[in-house]
Image 1 (cartoon, rainbow, N blue to C red):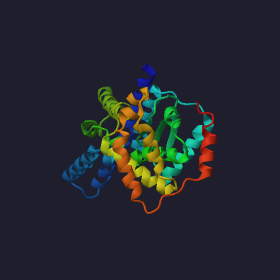
Image 2: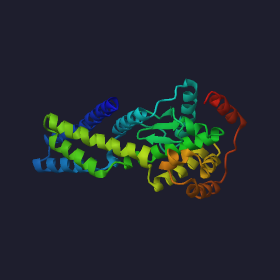
Image 3: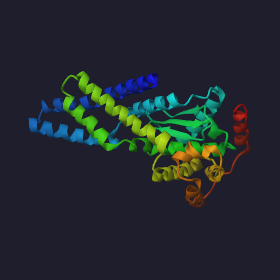
Image 4: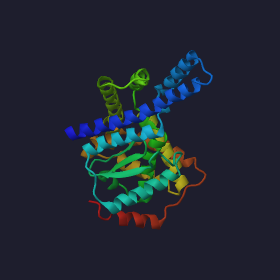
Length: 304
C-alpha cells in the first residue's frame, strides 16, 4: 500500500510540473507582449482569461492527459498483477492499435498501450491518454478476434471521447488552477506544493474510482458501444462481435456477476438492443475471416 501511494504521489508531482510549465508559459508570453504594446490592465485581463480557460477538463493538454493516465495506470497495476505472456501481449497490442488507427483519435501523446491483467475478474478499463487494460478473465470469454477487437474498440472509444477526464470533478480543477494562478509568479513553497499534490491525488482517485468501483455513466458506456461498432467496422471487423460478447454476459449467473465488468457496466440486456440498432444501420457489415480466427486461437492457446 505504501509503495502504491508513493507511485501516485510521484506521478502527481510530475503532473503538477507539466501544468506549471503550461501556466508559466501563459504568464511569460503575456509579459513579453506587454513590453511592446499592452498596458498593465490589458495584461491582467489576458492572464485572468487564460487561467479561466484552465477551469475545465477540455483544456487539459495531451501531455497532461498522458501523465494523468500514467498515474491512474500505476494505481490499477498496484491492485492487479500484470499477466506475464509476451507473445499474447504483443498480439493484444497489434489488434488494439489497429482498431485505434481507425478511431476518431488515432494518435495520443505517447500512443496507445494495451496490457493484460492477471485476474479472473471479467473486466476491461481505459485510462486517459490511451492506457487500456483487459483482464485474463475477459479474454477467456472471447471466441474470436472480431469479438476481442469489439471489446478493445469499446475501450478505445472511451479514450477517444475522453470519458476518463470527464470523471474529474470540476471543483478539483478549479481549486488546482486557482493555486497555480496565484503562485505562478512566485516560488512554490512546500505548503502550496502539498496542497496541489493532494488535489491531484484526488483527481486520480476520481478516475480510478470510476474505472474500478463505479464505472462510467450509462451515457458514456452507450457512446463507447456506438464507437465500438463504428471503429470496428472501419477496421474491417464484424461489429456483431460486440453483440456476441454481450450475449455471453446477459445470462451469467456465476460469482463473477457481482464484480468487474458486471459491477461497472450497464446490464448487457440494456445494451444489446442499442447495439443491434447501430449494426442494423450500417450499409455493409464486414465478414469474419478464418485467418483472423486462426490467428486468435494461436495467440490464446497458452491462456489459462
